[in-house]
Amino acid sequence: MSIQVYGIPNCGTCKKAVNWLQNNNFDYEFINTKENPPTREMIQKWIESLGYAPMRNTSGQSYRALDDEKKTWTDEQWIEAFAKDAMLLKRPLFVKNETAVAVGFRDEKVVREKLGF
Image (tube, rainbow, N blue to C red; front, top):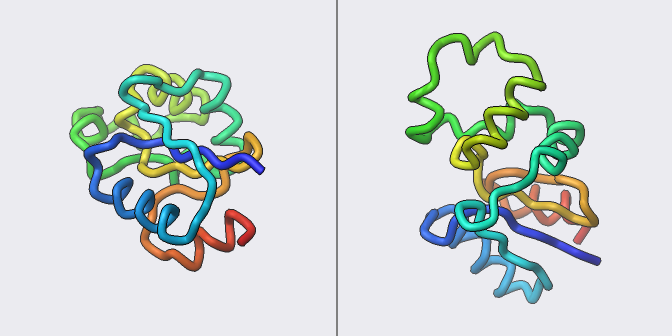
């Protein structure tokens, strides 16, 4: 089974998630989205799994810098925006067997359930 965690190393929520994965002996791969941004195709698959709304990093500067048109954007427009600026993606994003299963890390129980453990 393959688990990838997409995020950035200096993000507090990503650090918390990685510590939790390590403390619970999960086998995972951390992918730094600043150094290795996800492809448009990957983002499209993630949106098919989760929808674009949960994937938006609404607290980030990149999101706040977007104009109000973002409120009416289509999936396609969000795919394009995420592909251009990975900082728009909420972190961390958990991918299991090439399918996005969870985003964010507020509730360990939810993440554990989504990962199937």
